[in-house]
Length: 274
Image 1: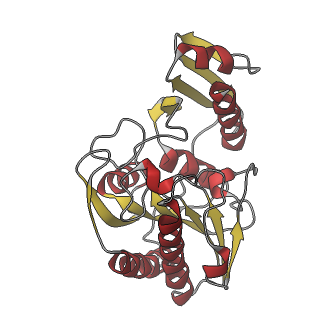
Image 2: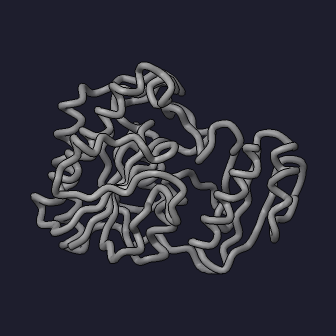
């Protein structure tokens, strides 16, 4: 049984400000250690529940956050950028289920710590086949393309509700309760990590018993609409072949499958950031 653990940073308990997840700030060192602790808790949980193999995808920023020297040695780490499947790198390697650790809600969500979708500086909204999604939905769709269900998510109460509404009976671990974009009631790390461990064990057992969500599959073709923050970002994004300008700040394209759509979206964001 091969499991993917896809990790982000904004959903780690205690994180309430960009400084804490910014590699140029002194606070970052503390929180990359906590991120590693959350991932280790998930690794222990899935292995204790019977998993044979675990791969981890470091999905925050440039993918250089998890402390490999402190990572559970029974797992392997995908890190660095760019990689073909970015936040869920390794999903195409025979993975049977995925866990999302440290995730955050989509851009525009209320009472959600550091809500954004891929880029806080340039993306104002994303729709897949007409349905609004955040990083949870995007990455779940990539997993679904390969027949991989997302069986657990950890983060604040808002991303957990977002995942449940989109994916169905996913195991959720609320590690903080957001009262705004940069304020939350947070569990101490040791408590959060114990809850992640126990939830990971439950998620594997539920999946084995047929009680976990089905893979999140989108029927092709995949139409992706992206709302950007400024019109000049849409000017640049519209340069990409196959991208249509819908209005001042919104572009759209259609792809034959989710992996192609995912790569095209990432290219649009890279152009918009220039």
